[in-house]
Amino acid sequence: MTASVALAEESAGPGVWAELVGQEEPVRELRQAAGMFATALTGQTVPGLTHAWLFTGPPGCGRSNAARAFAAALQCERGGCGQCHSCHTVTAGTHPDVHVVATEASIINVALARDLVQLAQRAPSQHRWRIIVVEDADRLNEAAYNALLKAVEEPPPRTVWLLCAPGPQDVAVTIRSRCRGVRLRIPPTAAVTELLVARGADPALAAFAAKAAQSHIGRAARLAKDESARLRRREVLDLAFGLRGVGDAVLRAGRLIEVAGEEAAAGTADRDAAERSQLLRALGYENETRLPTAVRSQVRALEAEQKKRSTRYKRDVIDRALLDLLSVYRDVLVLQLGADIDLVNGSERERLQRLARDGDASVSLRRMDAIGQARARLGTSANPLMVTEAMLVTIATA
Image (cartoon, rainbow, N blue to C red; front, side, top):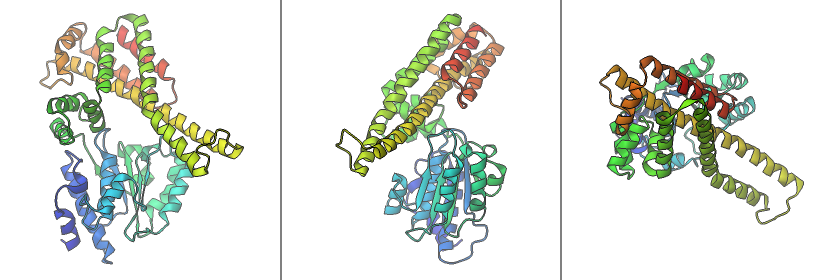
């Protein structure tokens, strides 16, 4: 083992890896790789050093966090200590040599891919690595994949590509075959609970949030700190327990879409206003009421991007609601089968048991299939209201 590898593995404390709970094996692999990259900086030849990585795993596993932590470890002289300037700037998203693509659009087009290729050709400004993190590599369209292929296959000596996607199959085979894979898993509920407590959450609330979110770290954190999120989840659960007939299904679908719109507006309003103010300030028109044509054009372009972001945020809110609804029928199926498995919604056992008596396992499976189909349709351009109405009608009549 080289001195650089040893340093990366033995750096004091968990450092930038602290929040990658339940990912011991991937973290060990990434620590070792950071040491190999450090060795390469000394001019030594490092066999097997890979400049393109693909982080995969189900939603909530922390694949984007893992890619960012790895980027910090590569820029840190101590392999990801979590305390130095490099670690702080990478974590904050301000490091000049780490570029993160986290698109709000449904696809990453060829124009953006070509921009990334040009960026990849530049030497790092701080003499370590030029790192490009693509958080949603599964959204690259075919033309974008083709544009990136050569850059990923033969990057400049100081460029590293870190791609993220739900699974290897979600990335074009021509790209994934040129990447070293890092597979993450959904962390244990207990590990997520410990993380939330370490962040300051009440232990009982943290345990509830971790289980309700089914170990999805982002959703668990939201449930632990936001009472309105917990109230919205309760409203979603009531959809399953109180659904009566087709008419009721249509009304409840409308309410679900309405709530999603309200949450999307609340979640993006401050950011939208800040971005508009920042743009006008940069153009020198922050306090002006009448804007010249060129400035109005840039403001309209920003508003168009913000509208796309709001639409995607709304769809994400609906998808989270469908996952909560799915957890109800999952619990019902567990009770119907008599399986020795913990319930996600254990506090609702009495209502779950009543729902379980109203049908059998085949009914529960049909309802779960309806939710799965709705989630798939939401990933397209389908109308969310129509998708949700069709799903709830199917559930009501199953």
